Image (tube, rainbow, N blue to C red; front, side, top):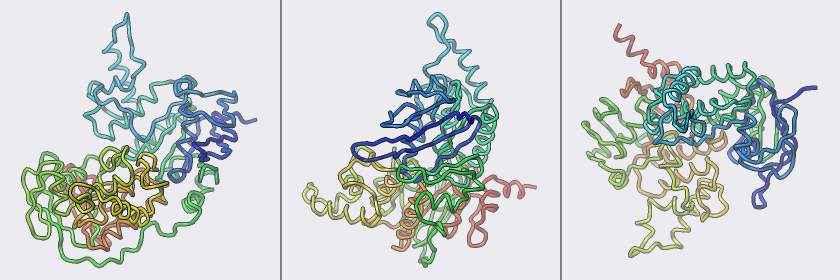
Length: 500
């Protein structure tokens, strides 16, 4: 008889009359990587929060190594070896790397923290997973990618028998993903059971031993990557097949609408490119290459030391986002939850925040016009929300992203910058976002799209620039726009060849 590391039988959970899980059965073997996939709202997070003790189940049973357990708190979960790394990082920014890793478990002697031992243990753990970080570094000063590394180390600092990873590669460069996969394979050899949650199906098919698909709170399929296949997984996730992830690019481009010449600041060097009306212009590159820094400089978040920005042949200063918006530039930022939407505000308030001038009179919002304006956009963008007056934090990631996009519809924009517009959202929501991007281009806007997913750049963009260490190495178009060419430029290989 097989003894599973994790056995969840007939798990159900409801929230306020909404059935989130319906008699779900989910099993993982010791030393197995089980991928858990499904659209936003399918029940993945709810199931994992029940397993880790953050939620209590309404019915069903949980067995760990064949023994029934009641996991009624996250601490109880950790005590029996279940560790979870959430997609939203829980880094304490003012503490060091070492303090974050061993938070709640600091080495103490006679009431005094043993700093030397703490830093040594942290450094050994970091090195054991193939990274090099100074354990004394303040965590808030790290890149998002390195903060993710700290989160992984924090989970591994406990005696983990089960490690749950929620979108662990969302902020990692390809070479860092490769390192993470080596780490997971080593943990698997040691008998650790790993539950891997990701919307990146290519990664799932590469790393997983088994894949379980959830849809609307129910299991729709389980099998090996070979048995499942990408098309079948998508069908099980959304109930229909997607034969073409990317909409047809049949939009004619117009005149040049945007240009930057020799843009420089302390993060990027001599960046120059143009964007035409109706064009989707991509910016690719590895994490830390300067992609987001270009966007922030254009939008007025970061200062421009030298260089010229033109919009409709007029030179812009863009010393603040407010000034950029007033000139016709919008931006959907990389960090959706901190910069793209205001989570505690309603869908209505988030969507109309950029258009209040046109929806107000004598300083008072015209409620009926605001409601009609918002309702039209919600329907146009197919935002799934009970009403326009629910808080945005009650929506799934994909619908939060649609709200972040919606606030730029209906106002007089000429250029929109989209920084990782599909990060952390499921495959069905991605397709809808791609259609919205095409709609913006069809309206005659210039679109700058930044993405770490090469296939997204290839599938959506007319042309794409590739960044490496703060410099724009080249611009690819038409048949040149391939994974091989993007990676060659992103790793600086072309630059190195020119030196030889």
